[in-house]
Each structure stands twice: as structure tokens, then as C-alpha cells.
Length: 513
Image 1: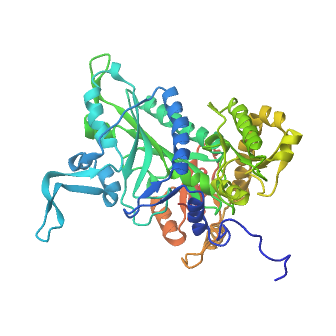
Image 2: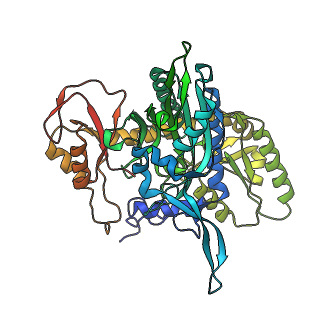
Image 3: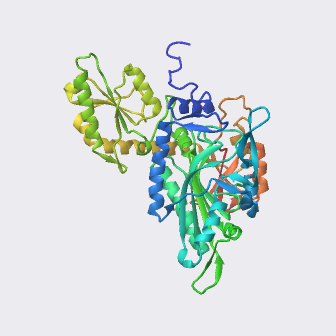
């Protein structure tokens, strides 16, 4: 291989093209986001990763409160009998539940601690909270005056996953779960759709991640729900990721939990309820939507730091002046407000080689890297590198122009990242009308686990008859599911791509996480 033909060097190895799954793990490690814990399937979220989650929380929490919701907290443990009341619900989560059967430890015959004190009733470690929150709602709701009841909880949940991946699928993860009760079905449906819109707006305008909003099929519906809606996004390996869900629960949980109210005429009714949630999976979505072969790439609105200033010090004599200039620049930048918070600036004054510092910040995905040395100071300018562009690209900008234009520059980066992700998704989406085309489109995605990075086709917009048995058959054969019935898809008469039966609209098929 000649020098010109040699593969470009990247900070992350393997690259996305070589082994996407391992590339993802290396991004998490290189960006210092999280690590596996001593407990199988659980993760330690490190400060940089948790700061991203805190920014996600900050924005969503303000949106929830702006729509009338209040935060509360409910128990981690749920009595088994609570789940048993809702048969569909317990069936849906039974294989994922962690169960507590004893309440203390005692020394055994060999001196090792063993569980003892068996509980009268086993407790389930919270996989989701519909049943335990329903018990409280049943006490809080008496009349129509108590409705609507709009509650959100920030919490952790446990689902006993067999195959885990940091952020995307772990045994314990962090999330929020909204739970509401209403006097009428129409009000509950409005709430369900309102929160779906909140998630869609957040994904596109804060995460810079385009999504398709739609209804889930019967086979993909949340256990116990009447209808489930989701936002679906495309990752860079062309697989779909379900990034948030909103469920219209009808009266199913109200009946099992006894949530009843008297109306204005004194008649007793069961309430209509909803639930909706997103999780730390969103951090994984950020990684896979935007990152490149040099590390994490963060949209400015969710980045823990917007700007890192890297002092270039050639000798000890110039150090005090360079550092003072950098600190003054940082203070001036921080006076600007971006997305409701001061521009977040770090001055990296660590005693490390300049190249080492630069690559650490590249891997962490900080939006703007600013180098300042004596030559820049003499010109009253800064050398700026944008993380959403090539690592070696840089631009010299006058200091005052950089300070006054910092918000516009961050906005431009945010918009560019959304547009790039949307162009990628659209380039890997297509309409398919025949079974042979459908099979060919997805069959290229190898089922062989020894193939590091199979091609996953993308999003296929196809007619579907709606039969759960047909969807199950396709999933078994090709590993593909209906991601959603898009809300904005027009009515269109056609024939199911698999069976030839009549179909009234197209749905989105894809392989998924």
C-alpha cells in the first residue's frame, strides 16, 4: 500500500465502518462517559456522561413543568400482588423482573452471609411504576375536581437484561416516567399526544436528532396499553432506535388499581390514564447519531462545556500573560447566555502536552476548541476549531468578533448537526412495494455475528396489512419490525408488501436496537 493509499489515522479504533458495535464501546470509553460496574449489566456513569444526562434532565424537566406536571417520588419496591392485578402488564415484564424474597443477612455455617428472613410477599424491584403509582392515585383522586392529575418521576428502574450495552440497554438505568389521570378518554388522548410532541421537539431541537413520530403496532405495544406512540430515529449503522414512548392506557390500570372519581352529577367513574418516558438511552442515541471516528460529537445545547480554551505556552516567561488573557476571554464568553444558561467555558491549564490535551477534548466532543498563544494575543485573535468539522480544520477569528458571535456560532453548529443527521436518514430511506425488494433490502444485513458491521438497509416505507402474525414472521426471518405507523403519513391505498392484502397506509420497517 502506498503512502497515498494508506488509511487515514483516527483517534478511535476500530472505525464505524470496520466494527460499529465495538466503535460505540470505544467512544464511550474514550469520551470518559461510563464504565461497567462490578454488578453484571449495570454501569457507572462518570462525570462527563452524567453531565450530559443532567442537561437532558434540565431541559425536559422544564418542559414537563411548563405543561402543568409536578415531580414526585414513589417506592423502588412493588408488591408482587400489585403487578398480578394487571395480567397483561405482569406478562410483559415477568422475564425482566428482579425479585426480593428476603429482608436480611445472617452468618451461615461456613461464616458466609446468607439471606434469611423470608418476606411474606415478594417485592419486585421497579421495572416501571404504573401499578405502584396507581395505588397512590387511587387515594388521591376522589372527585372530578382532583383531575387531571399530572405527575412525573425521575428515578432508576431495573430490567434483567441478558445482553447489555452501556446506555443503550443495561440492567439498571435512569429515566423519567410521567403518569397522569383524566376525567375523559379525549383528555387522556390529548395528553398522550402532547407528551409525544414534547419528546419529538426535544429530540430535534436539543439533540439535533431527527425523529419519526408514530403509533406502535399491536405486537410492539406497551403491555396493558390501549395505544402506544413513539419517536424513532436512525443511527449511523442505519438501525432504528426507539428514543421515547407515550402510552394511552385507557381505563385498564385505573380499573386494576381502583382509580375512581365522582363526576359533577355524583356518578362514579374509573379515570383514564397515560404514561410516558425517556431514559439514559438518549445518551447512547447522541453518540450514535453524531459521533465520528475521532470520538464523541455533542450538540451544543446538551454539551457540558461549550468552549475549551487551550493556552499555548512556549516558555515560562510568557505563561502568566497567556493565562491571564485566557481567563479574561473565558469570563467574557461566560457573560453570554446560550439556551438558558451561561456559555460554559473551561480553561485547560493542566501540565500536559498540547497534543494530548487537544485529543482529549476532541474525544469528549466539546463543541469549540480555542487555542491561544503569544502570536494570537499579539493579533488580538483566537484559533477556533469546530468539533462538527474535521479535526484539523481551524479558523482565526478576531477576539471581539468571537465573543460577540459565540451564541450565533453555537446555533449554527446545532442547526448543521440536525441537517446532517436528517440528510443521512433521508439518504437511507426508501419506498418498497414488492416482497422481493423488501427481502433484498434487509437480507444484506448479515445474521452472522462474526461479521463485525453488517449493513442494515435503513428505513423502508411499505404497505402492511397490520397482522401481528405477519410481523412476527418477518421479525423471525429478517430481524425487522415495524418501527411505527407515522402520524404524518398520508392515507394511501396499496397492498401489503409481504402478503398482498389490502393496506390503507405505509409504515416504517427497520432493524432496531
